[in-house]
Image (cartoon, rainbow, N blue to C red; front, side):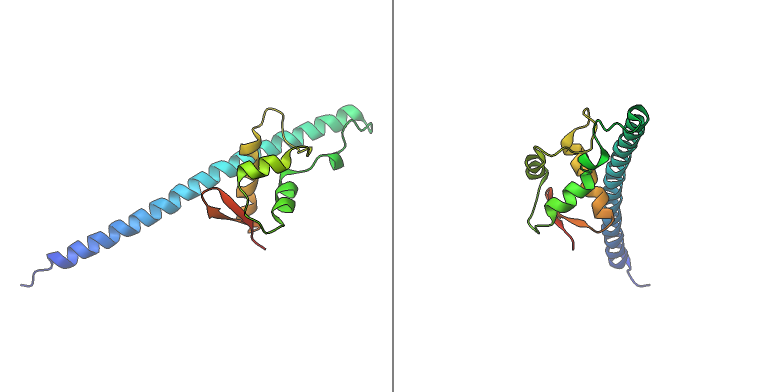
Amino acid sequence: MRDIRGDLRDRLDRLGQRRKQYQRILDDTLTEENLVGQLLAIEEQNYERLQRHNRVSHGQSLQSEQELVSLNKFVTKTLSDREIWDINKLKVAAEGVNLDIEKSASLGRSLQAALMGLKQRNIVFSLGNGKWRQAR
């Protein structure tokens, strides 16, 4: 009878490595899912606010939709310079821009959620360590 313990140890090691790889993918997916969920919640609030505003103003424009810049458009336009950006740099760039987010929403979290949504659509990609660049 041949000793197969070495083969079994190798196979067990490979299975452990595969499990760790899948766990990293699962962790990344969970993080991304949470961020997209946050983005959806923000967008739902923005939509409701816009609907309320439209009902209240009846054509009187207190602040038209064109004056508000969506997060996705802001991030896409800002990253179009093909430079490497992080959240802090995006926050600075957002100063003076009338972004379409709730006053109570955190700008950093809103930007992060927008980045994750754009990543899903292959418009931006993460370089790791919070660094982002336009994909196209």
